[in-house]
Every structure is written in C-alpha cells, then in structure tokens.
Image (cartoon, rainbow, N blue to C red; front, side):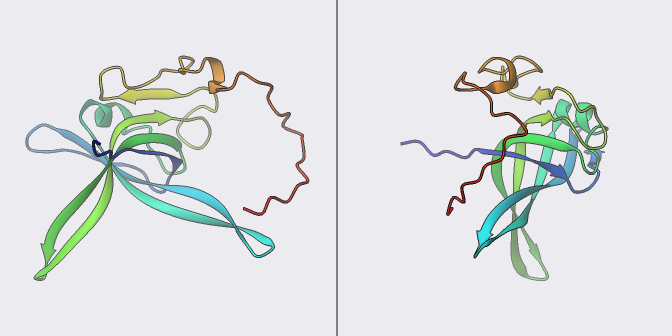
Length: 158
C-alpha cells in the first residue's frame, strides 16, 4: 500500500500573511491558522484551539497574499512537511503544512461573506465558487437541510 500525506483544514488566520520573493524569484507566503474544536469535559463543553503554520508557494502566494489577513476564514488542503535545522548545536524540527489548495471562505476581515474563492497549484485541483463536486452548496446526501432555528435536545455522550 502506498503512503499518504494529506491534510484538510478550515480555520481563521491568526495574523496577516508574511509575503516575500526569494532570490530565485519564487514567491512564498507564510501564515498560521487557528482551528477550533469543541470537546466535552464532564458536563461542560469546552472550546480548544489548535494552531497550524502554513507555507504557500508560487502563483498562489502572489495571488492570495493580500487577502490573507488576520481573522479571515480559509480552507487549506496540503501535506505535512518537517523542517529540520540546528540551533546552538541542538537538532530542531518543526512540522508545517505545505499548501496545495487554498480557499477563501466567507466571513471575517478581508473578503465578502458569500461564496468561496479557490486557488490551486495542482492540475484541476480546486473548485471555483458554485462548482462543488456534490452540486450547489456541497450537500452530499441530497437530503433535506435542518432549519437554522432547530434546537437539538439530546445530550450525546461524545
């Protein structure tokens, strides 16, 4: 069986993206996102944030850097990469996400609240607004949607 290295995240930028062009002419954009998670601790639900560093290369970095501002919600598909270096004689390492596809999602600073924009470095890798593979809105099962005012009363133990 082949190895697999794929990450998909949706979160909000924790800071404005840092954009630079390397001496080779390659554009690079570094940023980080916070991904929130709710977990149950006893009888209470707690929010927990996880932070991920992301690097975006090439034309995507050129195109998106001005939209990658603190608070903006984005979707990222990519792969995990481990950076290794030595500092003061000690071996150090850090895992970062090398973005393959970045989607600007609605809400937050730096963009409109409707629709999504997608940019992909892979051939045929991204979906533009309205061309989700499951049709409009990405409703995979084609079933009825739950009304936004519906209140769930069951306390599910997980």
